[in-house]
Amino acid sequence: MAVCYTVGMTADEVRAVRARLGLTQRELAARLGCDRVTVARWETQRRALTGPAARLLRLLAERPELLPLLRK
Image (tube, rainbow, N blue to C red; front, side, top):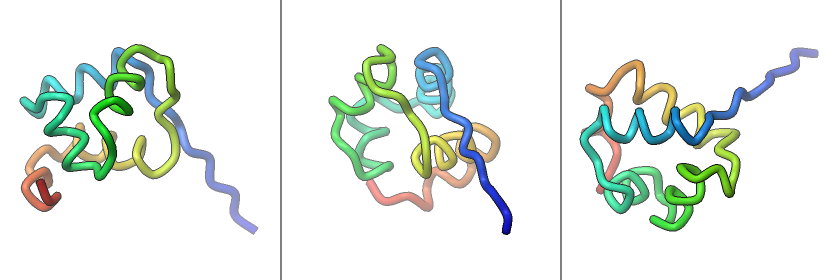
């Protein structure tokens, strides 16, 4: 049986990726399908960014050309 561990992201990493993508908190939230308040909490470390959302944001950090594939 394979075990998959998801590595979370720090608040600084989330802010850096969002800035690199040129998105506001509201725009990033719309692309990820969550609320702006959630993004704000990730960026202030009041809520941990883990699981699929962390994986997706890491993918976008490495491949920003994929951003247009996510609905606004």
